[in-house]
Image (cartoon, rainbow, N blue to C red; front, side):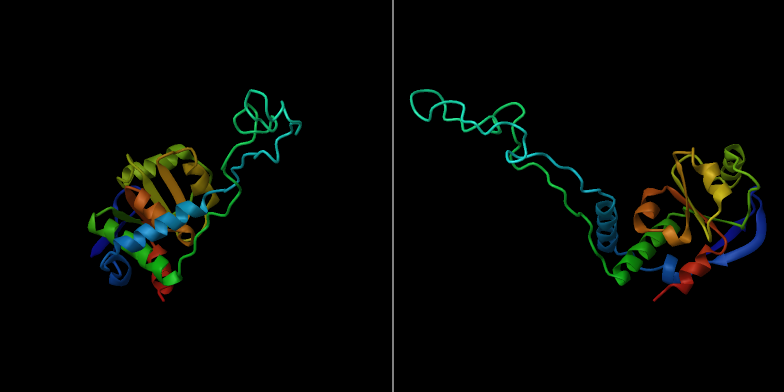
Length: 207
């Protein structure tokens, strides 16, 4: 597949890019995408949820009444049946992180990129800089290259503070570097805007 590289005003720069079949033209593996997305979402969890059980509640352990002679046999106010008592089987801090091997993660990323290429949801734009953070100017660029309207993933070859700050207030736009690209962000976006040079970095990292 061959795509034109656009200027930030929406016109064609004259440069054509032939998408690498090893990245944008593989046979997609849906299960690999599923495993990688599950891992990504699990790794975002803090795992700090916690409740107190009856051994941690700050109540007296004094027995409320006699064991026999009428009434329920309550041991103390720490029982879970009382308001303020300990919780039974409540959450405890835990690590939700999962591991995936590098080959599977690469297969998942390339499968996601292949889907976007098949759907014609990839736009290449020539490298550009912004002298200062300007959200209005960034919106004009998105409109010119016809990438706005729905969720857009903007991928840069290297970090640019001004471009990132210009997009920070836009809920439908996410700007990342090629080092941060992952299966979840690709699949969660409606379209991809790749700055020329990103494809070469991805190709250089194929193992």
